[in-house]
Amino acid sequence: MSNPEHLRYSKEHEWVATDDGIATVGITAHAADALGDVVFVQLPEVGDTVTAGEPCGELESTKSVSDLYAPVTGEVTAANQDVVDDPALVNSGPFQDGWLFKVRVAGESADLMSAAEYTAFTAG
Amino acid sequence: MTTESPAPRRTALDATHRALGATMTDFAGWDMPLRYGSEREEHVAVRTRAGLFDLSHMGEIAVTGPGAAALLDYALVGRLSAVRPGRARYTMICREDGGILDDLIVYRLTDDEYMVVANAANAQVVLDALVERAAGFPGAQVRDDREAYALIAVQGPKAPAILGRVTDADLAGLKYYAGLPGTVAGAEALIARTGYTGEDGFELFVRPADAPAVWAALTAAGADDGLVPCGLSCRDTLRLEAGMPLYGHELSTALTPFDAGLGRVVKLDKPGDFVGRKALEQAAERAAAEPPRVLVGLVAEGRRVPRAGYAVVAGGRPVGEVTSGAPSPTLGKPIAMAYVDAAHAEPGPAAATGVGVDIRGSHEPYEVVALPFYKRP
Image 1 (cartoon, rainbow over the protein chains, first blue to last red):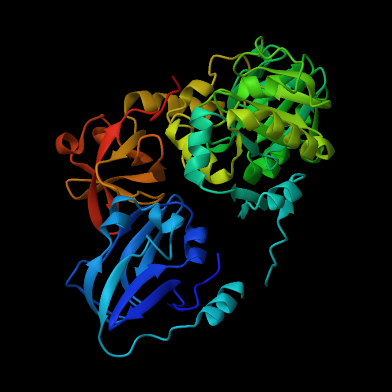
Image 2 (tube, rainbow over the protein chains, first blue to last red):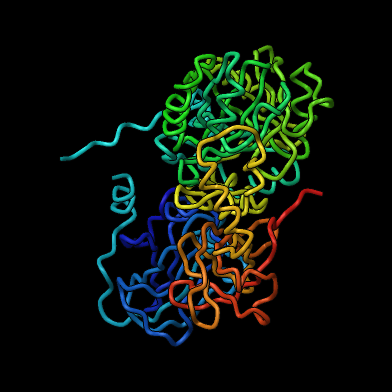
């Protein structure tokens, strides 16, 4: 699956869509493919403060558990309860229904990549 | 000194897997399919319909000659001389100190011909041990047959119907843990009713050159029954649900078969000496008198998944260790096998037993259950 042009990407394979100071965060199709079937997600809670580059949750697949990293710093304004209830959404629609949480961005975000840069990053 | 790990070996079905878009993984030095699509869907297919596996990494060793039966009675813990031609046996090979070198399936093909199937990671160790143990048996020959076979498994409730369409072998007369020579899609095969999934099914030992055509014939024969290609990821969750041990997880050289709850495979009443007898007699007494740790099943009351190496706890104290853990597609909950102190091995819900698993610092409640988690209807 190609990486949408309008998103920005972290080295930890999260995508970020920023709209009016609110960043929506998910993991990329590349990351979802690498994990395999996601069976459990633990998300930050609304009101939590997350810090760019630091773990803020967990993703469990059949084979492994991975930390979920915050790609931006700020206060969590939403967590996707649909994904908590049905983690398979992360595999079926990583860029759509499988979004994970939203953050009111405070200050500078981490070093994020464009779609082309991220595509090159994952090909390397 | 630096050593470069050699390039992984590829099976005769490598091009097939790539054409199917498999996610590949290095397993015991082999480049094997981990999954083709969703491992959960592959798992469900085997439980409800059928799945097709490439297991060509398994290690075949031929033991032949008029002394073959006597050699295997000496070299392994089972009584292979009592196995009738055409039947198979689950058994183990142990060290002199009783430690498990590998678990094996041994097929008796004829009076004087056995095929030993070892785990890929242990095949060389098993081969070396058999060759060494054959020194006193001039009537037995040990031959490395790993290059001679590809191994294809078709597993699941639809497996007999699917295989029946491409073979003239008498599958109805082929019992569980039996094997017979026949043809599959025109290719010579040893057809065995064995598997590692907890379902009915077959393992087909064929020439590597024939493997792609046999795979294609089975794929076509199974299309209407919902047969799907299956990778090692679902094989692991299938065997875990079925309570089957995996070497390197539930079995190791640090454990005897009695420690693993599999003392029944050790035939202490067979005549003559065998490698490990003395140590295993002591292990049997120890297991009967004061079992140190017991292999149990654990079922999550929450949703976080236990992994191999995690501590089992009770009342805040470690009382055991998880050996295998995964989300169970059939139960819809995380499950695990674990060795726990005998005092905490009684089945019961966490509220009664206080048993939990330390999942990255958080003690999650787990029900202790008897194995297996799943038995086919």
